[in-house]
Amino acid sequence: MRLFTTLGALFSGLFLLTASPLLADDFPKNLVVNVAVADICQSPTPVNEETACTMLTTQALYGEPLLAKDFVNGWYRVEAMQQVTYDENDGWNSCGGWIRAEQILLADNIEDANLVVTSDHAHVYTAMDEASAEGSFAVNLSMGTEIFGESETLGVWKVHLVNGTKGYIRGSHVTTLAAKADQGSMDLRKDIIRAAKRLRRDYYLCNGRSAYDSSSYGQMTGMDAAGFVNIVYRANGFHLAHSVNDMYMNCTKMSSNPQKGDLVFLSSANEPDLISHVMIVKDDNTLYEAYGCCGKGSVHKISSVEKLGATLSSYNSGDNNGEYVIRFGSFIK
Image (cartoon, rainbow, N blue to C red):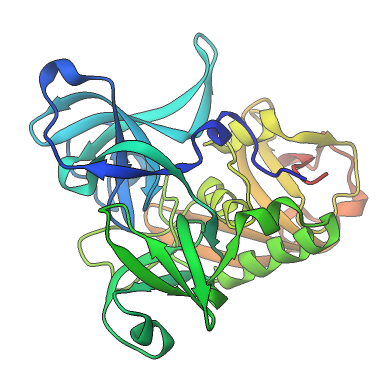
């Protein structure tokens, strides 16, 4: 069972890298993210928590492939090829924005990732003995980060970093994408809930798409509703579309009775055609969501009765409870 979904599946690899500068006539050019988390902004201007809702487009994780289209004053205009979004005029395209030049490297010779981080974070250490105990580390990867593992010895993977060096990561923090692709639906549903639980109490960040890291000085981390679902599913082998509305367009629509790991989509009763929120189903009366506003909020567990006024089995998809129009969808076969 192959789990990658949407156009992002075409760009699931990591890259071997060169460090030569881009010239004006070099575009388009393949890039790769060289930091744990990088902001992709609406304009070539730094974003903070107060401006994230209007100026942050999305975030890209370590090793994510980007396509550079332009360069202005230390910023590249890029497309995030594993994050697709729908536009009424242009159809499906990669999510675009601006990224700081120091956060990327040029990329050539695709090297497919074969591991994905399933813990909330995973340190990549510079030596195997450090990975077995506690030592210095090269980068602290977010859940959902994909990386190439060369070999596993005594529960430690040797991995390829995007700058051409090697590192070591604990096997308990990753799983192989091959295992995810072959996983049965019942185990997959359980793993989606495990991933959601690991992110409980993570920081809410409007347009964020990364596990919160309190030690990530100078770089915002956290997630909104779409980012939360994106990261949880990415840790389970999926590349979902960018926004909650994009996700709903791509999912298998359900008439009723969503199961563990399925999704509940909400729109305002006043704007029923605009999907504005998404949550992960644990059971008939339990949901996981990232909820907040203006830098305040968190990933948390909430009862369906508290959120929606009744258990999920009380509703059919499309029902209006006076506050929300409730819809159900799934990516699990």
